Image: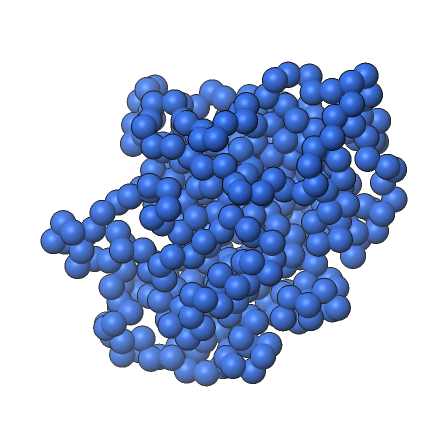
Length: 372
């Protein structure tokens, strides 16, 4: 509610000439009722975008975020804080450009409504960040009365097949509630729990939720990715592939839309109803995401007690994190970061997990220092 109120006070959309061939500035771009200017730094338009050092093409999203950009020579942006925000975006891009792999991000300042992105509409592997959409699709089922958070679920052998999470080490036959299945799917990215939830609600429900949020370039193809199934890993039949069109996919802007929608569900009962949930269920989803145990990316360089409602994702050459960062009890910014085709060992000798953690943590720290 606070974010929407601020957005309504913004003056008419400014436009100005791009300062470089790689910069575009778009007019006001409404996201779930939030009108705010968008700054988008992207590579020059091409039918297919290629990342250096790889032969695998990246696909641009089918639809640009918000209305088409309008540019007028000679005009300058005059919104309060715009120059400071542009400086932040420049710093974020400088971090990204120093790395030999694809980096895409989406950022929204929740106090001013300003938002920006780098490769924000480029389709990339979602990995386990997709579990935020699965969580919200399950909350929809709870709201309809089709799913009971207190119902018991017996975790048997059919679900203990993936190498993601902790339940792979448990003996089959234990029982937990649906609530705790959802919690473990989020906080330790447990794929036994992901399989259970997808069996309970179906992938069609997850894709429907994504469409309703406006995630037009997000596709959920597999409940449990085949390359995480331990028997296939053991016999060599698992294929660790991040090829476009073969895996669960999204874009940074799509995940930003989803996070913003969850925040609005928590604060706006009428909007929550249109999304098929309630404010209480929106709040529960954010609470679960705030209990995340895998904190080596977005929260990595933030003060230790910072609330970050987030979800990581890792697959093949992909290291991601998407979340909402709070300060003094209030959400301050949304940040979704996706790295793709990261070499196992970088030219400077650093390993991919550590290098991407420092990059994503550094991006979040820059936003923290500027926006909170």
